[in-house]
Length: 122
Image (cartoon, rainbow, N blue to C red; front, side, top):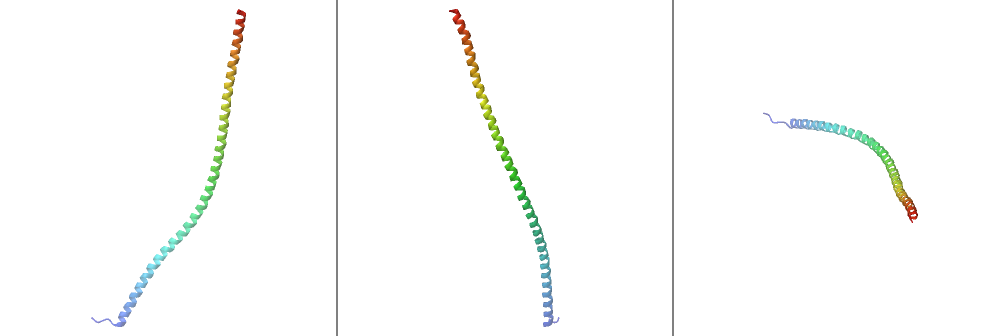
């Protein structure tokens, strides 16, 4: 065979270089397209997350307000229950006092009735 000439070798190297550069460019374009797609997705997702974040903040504020309302209702109910307990306690004390008065009046009546009989027996 004949030995390659310098111009043939240079031409082959040039063709090989062009093929490698074309291959690298193709790989770069495919990677770049993938990265552009991912970047677009990240940007779209970022906007969706920001919207969800605003909605979450609004819902959290509404929930806090609802919790405050429940707390006020609980405090009011507790106060009213305590008042009912106080009224019940007062009623029980009044009932005991009335029972003591009733027993005292009964004893006085018995003593008068018994004392009258004793005087007549004398």
